[in-house]
Figure 1 (cartoon, helix red, strand yellow):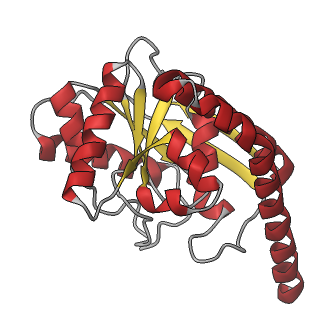
Figure 2 (figure 1 turned 135 degrees about the vertical axis):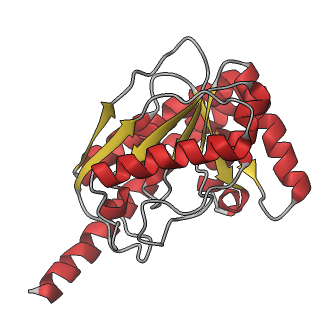
Length: 250
């Protein structure tokens, strides 16, 4: 029985990746056209394309997404969204979560090297090279420019996948420094099911099912990076524990 289940999982994963790639090639010409409209207008158009991509892909994968609002999303000002990073499924789930307001996501520069997908990724996100001090400073300045245009930004403060089986791994300071320097509120968002839909240990662990994103209350920045970071960490840790996130083990 386990062998049959494993084989069915592999077939489903191959089907899902085929759908993902087919949609990517269908939408790629529209991304190229949108890129000619500049970083702001063109970037917003590309996000709409990526959201459509996610809508179709998740429907065909048998995944259903819903947002849970423990606090409202206010559309009259930009915020810094921070989320827990646990799976590659975070990317399509973000396309379902952050709408209709425009956002820009901070993403790893290495992903931009992937053929075709890398072009879309590069046009849609603010790239960061964590190995380069100059690269980090450039991405920080670009994020500040985005906020100045009243466009929200999305950052994973853990930086990489949380593989600790604790609610969260340690946070980097970047998101919290930007919040204080630009006086921008932080709104934590919890991804509860990405780990169950695609485990970071295997690309063939993909499964259909639910996806939930929880919007927690905004946190005002204050003027102390460590205090703000701890406040956000505590709120997210408490939320993930309360919702019984499946990767949490003692």
